[in-house]
Amino acid sequence: MVRAALLVRPLGLPVLLGLLLAACSEPPGASLFPLDQGRTWTYRLTSEWENNTSEREAVVLRNEGRDSALDSGRAWRRRSDSGIDYWLRADDTGVYRVASKSDLEEAPRPDPQPRYVLKAPIAVGTNWSASTTTYLLRRRNDFPPEIRHSHPSVPMVYTIVALNQQVETPAGRFDGCVKVQGEAKLKLFSDPVQGWRDMPLTTLEWYCPGVGLVRVERSEPANSTFLLGGVMKMELMSWE
Image 1 (cartoon, rainbow, N blue to C red):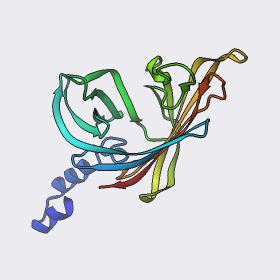
Image 2 (image 1 turned 180 degrees about the horizontal axis):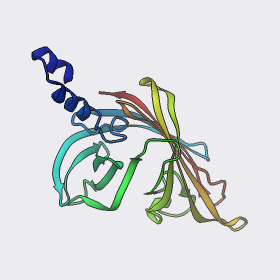
Image 3 (image 1 turned 180 degrees about the vertical axis):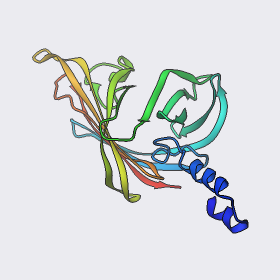
């Protein structure tokens, strides 16, 4: 924008400085999780369980632009092809979700408090808490088997653990990425021998400048006769 303006006519120093400052005022984390309209990401999602079964599917996310569907004001809407919409905002505190909605719900459901995707400052050691659920843990003999139906909200602590990471994905190699680690524990009855145990839930996420989320690794081990655990990997296939 600054270069285009200079090609049209000379700018005074105050105007030029104003443009440069505006360009530098992007909220922390905004380039690592782009919200602007028209962006699309396609991921390969692979899930593998401890009983040697696996599933693979494609996941597509699209940025739909800003709208006023929320009582709290405008927010950026992101839609998954699974039928879920998310509303997000970015400011000096970071990038965070403020509401979500499935196709079965009439209206967006506000989050009780902002759910951060990336929290400022973007530096090693920055941490925050957000709710998660189980994606892989299952009961072997009960219905429904998924643990998430009985434990829909599990507190997880996220921490920025590394900067300037290089990540290889099917979509290519990305540099300057931020690595985030999430850790949680969920107490479940494992089996009559081990009794109640704290089941670890671990997430690793990589966010890259100008692209966004490129890779996720999720681990939910069970090692139990009553429960089934596994690992999940989500990798960027293409983006635009």
